[in-house]
Length: 475
Image 1 (cartoon, helix red, strand yellow):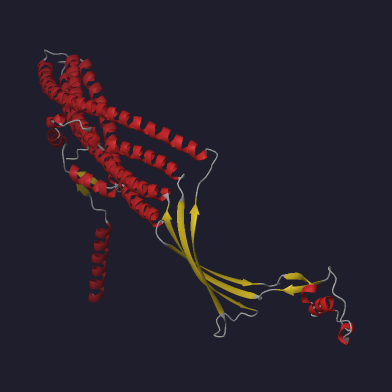
Image 2 (cartoon, rainbow, N blue to C red):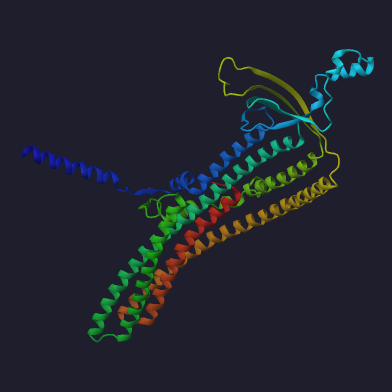
C-alpha cells in the first residue's frame, strides 16, 4: 500500500511539472526589447531576410551562366520494326562490269557472254535494312560562353538587385521599428486611460454617495444627484470602451512583434518615462541630407535598373561568341548486350565555336533601345522628384515633432489647471456655494484635459519615431 501511495504521489508531481512546462509563460518587454524581438521574429522582417538570401542566390545564378556548363546525355534506342530502304537493283548486279567490258572490247566470242542474264530494269529495287536493331549513345558536352554583352549587363543587374533587396530590408526594419513604437505606445495609452478612468469613477461614486445623503437630508436638490449620475454613466461607458481597445492594442502589439495573437504580453516601460526619453529637440538640428536615406537609395536603385535595361538593349546589337567540346561513345547490336565485355564501342569527339552576329532586325532593336532610353530619362526625373519630396517630408516631420513637444507642454499645464479648477468646484459644491452644473463642467473639462495629456505624450513618441524613420535614425 505504501508503495502504491508513493507511485501515485510521483505521478501527481510529474503531471504538475508537465503542466507548468506547458503553461504559457508571460513575456515582459521594454520598448527596446520589443523592437529587437520584432526585428527578429516579425514575419515581414523574416521574409525580407529571405529576399536577401534569394538575391544572393540569383546573383550567383547569373554569374554561373558565363562559367563552363557540362551536360551529359545517354540515349538508348530499340528499333522494334526497322525501317526498310529501297536501292536500285542495278547497283547490286554482279555482271554489270562484264557488260561494260563487253561494250568496250566486244567479248561476244567468249562462251560466258551468252550465259549473262539481262540487266535489271530501271524500276527494279532491292529492299535493304541499315543499322542494327538496338543502339546506345553516350555524350558529354562542355559549353563555354566567350563573349556576350547581355551577360556583362546581367552581372551588373544581379549586383543592383542585391542592393535593392538589402535596401528593402533596411526599409522594412525601419517600418517595423516605427510600427512597434506606435503599437507599444497605444498599449501604454490604453493602460493609462483605464487607470485614470477607474480613479475618476471611484471619485465620482464617492461624490455621488455623499450627494445622495445630502439630498436625503433635504439639503440639496435632486438635479445635483442626477448631474453626477449622468457624469458617472458617461465615465463607465468610456471605461468599458477603453478596456476593449486595450485588448485590441495588446493583440496588435503581439502581431507586430511576431508572437501569438493571444500571448500574455507585459510592458515594463511607462508612457511618462518614454515621453521624457523622446523629448529630444536636438534631432531637429540634424542636417537634411536626404541622399543618405533609404528611400533615396531605393530611388537610385530604380534609376540604375533602368540604366542597365538601356545597356541591355544596346548589347543585343553586339555579336556573341561561344565554344563547345563534345565527346561520346556509340554502341550497336541486334541484341541487348551493351554491358558485356565483348560489346564494341566507337568513340567520337569534336570542338567548335559559335559566332552569332546580329545584322538586321527591321529596326526592332533600335525601337527597344529608344524605349529603354525614354524609361531611363523618366527614372532620372523621378529621382529628382523623390529628392524634393523627401526634403518636404523631413521638414514636415520636424514640424510635426516640434508641434508635438509644444502641445505636450501645453497639455501638461492645462491638466494642472483643470485639476485645480475641478477641486475648487468640488469644495464649492459641497459647501453649497456652487452648482452641480458648474461641477459637472469642471469634471468634464478635467477628463478632457487628462485624455489630451495622454494623447500629447503619445504624439511626442510617435512623431519622433516618424522623424527618425525618415532620417534613418534608430537611436
